[in-house]
Length: 479
Image 1 (tube, rainbow, N blue to C red):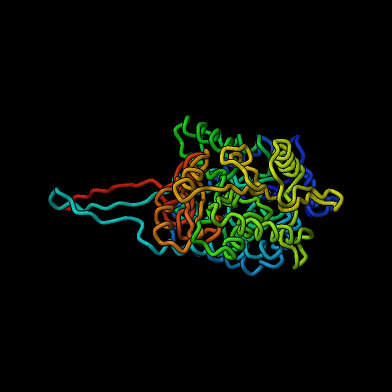
Image 2 (image 1 turned 180 degrees about the vertical axis):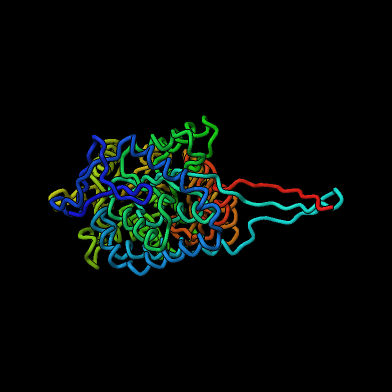
């Protein structure tokens, strides 16, 4: 069993907290991937001070040199995609092709932000005063805290680390406890690429370690991805101490099948969005709104497809969806399914767990003819469960889409251009798709939710650079 180590100030040390974590392969519960201690409060403090000590030299190193390290680290991650993809599959259950795809994306994200060092870092402005040279600069904030989730163990850390580092900040990073070896692989790539000691400090741990980072008065910014209740609590905490917070949170994403949709394509897109990664994406399709004119045709085809999906070993090429990540997630999803059944909802497909397979497997589950205000249509499930909601036209669909506390990603399936534009204008969400899955992002575009799905600036793209920097205006009279 590989040793689990923090990386603080460039030194690898065994975490020494009282709480321990036992990480199991979710597709084979007899396979103990790691068994390790969480970090102590003292280790969090050491990580913060190491990041603060490393900040002046990293800031002064210059963006081009910082970028060269990020680009090298990104290339290393891409080159190791097959090996690290298999590790990800073992640690958190993502099917191997999806895991390998994530590695490619993660590496390219680091390279994308490395390229940003070639852009201007400020502007030259005219002054109303004589002989005054006026210009602006971006300046890093200092040491920042990053708290990342388990569902994308490489890409989400990289899309936080990339902009934080290229702009000259140093980092204290707490990943989710489920995949410590994946997190260490990210650190290995950065250090191998030449990252100086203390610029990124990895501390393993659970909620207490995350809370210590969030509350630390010497961290001027916190970026978090996770559940909505936790994100809202973090935003209040960080804002209360006059620091910056950026929280990407949950979703209850809808795909609307318009009467002018290609039904076969709509079935394919709904299946991809709902059941890839066992539905464990904040952008996963959790609701499908269907115009009554096409509801029967869509429902029959979608249910047939869901029943035919292969659930099993995430290393096997024929597997469409593997296990959910752990016992807690397994139990939570089963409770949602059982609550739907108890409420009298019609299970059109799935509805069963498969604990006898030795893993946390749940069959793709479809509830049909669900009311838009039913609990299953309102609450984030984060699993392979989707509800079908009949609607009478575009306006009712938009009302239903907007009728939750979330606003992350919603999409419409249609050949009607006017309907597409009206949907894109009318839905309350940060991401809108037309004839595309609700799940799926591109690194150069802002990604973030409205309402209970996001607080602060969106991630990815160039807007996030504003989160990690101050503006400085300089006026210089030269005569």
